[in-house]
Image 1 (spheres, rainbow, N blue to C red):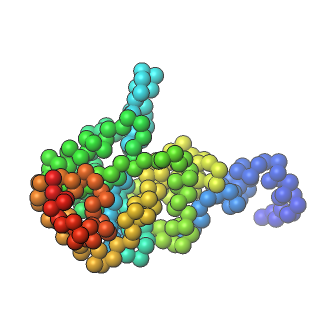
Image 2 (cartoon, rainbow, N blue to C red):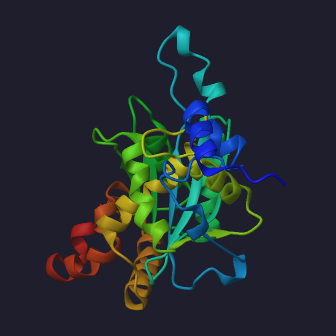
Image 3 (cartoon, helix red, strand yellow):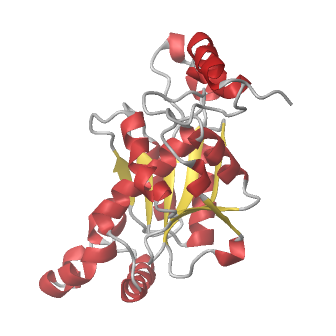
Length: 274
């Protein structure tokens, strides 16, 4: 093998550009000083090793809605991303399941309902942009099946996608991002993560890493589960799901999770009945 002189390498990098130099000479996807995430800190685990006591969220990034005739095909070409993300009592974030594919709204709802049955999620979050109606249709479908879990709109509030994805940086850097082996959604997440730079996203599709990033907002709002909190969550999910009068449970996510125990003590559970 030929060892190139350091000065020559610097000239090659300046001539080729950082991105091309990284891929052609260093055999890396992105220059190390440009990548937002240190992918080596992401941990892969077997499904049987997913930490117990995790609180699961189902996060949905719907395909774009057609606005006019020129964009009428957008729903058929854009991907819908659905991710099942757990937050562990240790503050870890674990991507356990999900799908990213072209699908109709009906198909999206079916996927969410199946994941809800499997993981007994505490909350379903749906990214709300423009005139999207998936969230409201999902609430109706869940109510018909007796699932009174909260469905919460996730609103960007003026933040860019890159800014929101950057919220995952401390989680990755601290080794708290866990991916389940042999899950296609996890492979896709890792691929997309490796193309995020500090200034842009250097890949055509970023739907999976984007939808997973919403978990940080939910962690901020609802905290990290503890054993007592998880027992309370499970009891409330069971009691409220069996009571059709408790329609406010799925209308407003903020009546559940960490704060609901204290609220129930002060205002009485009758306040939560529809």
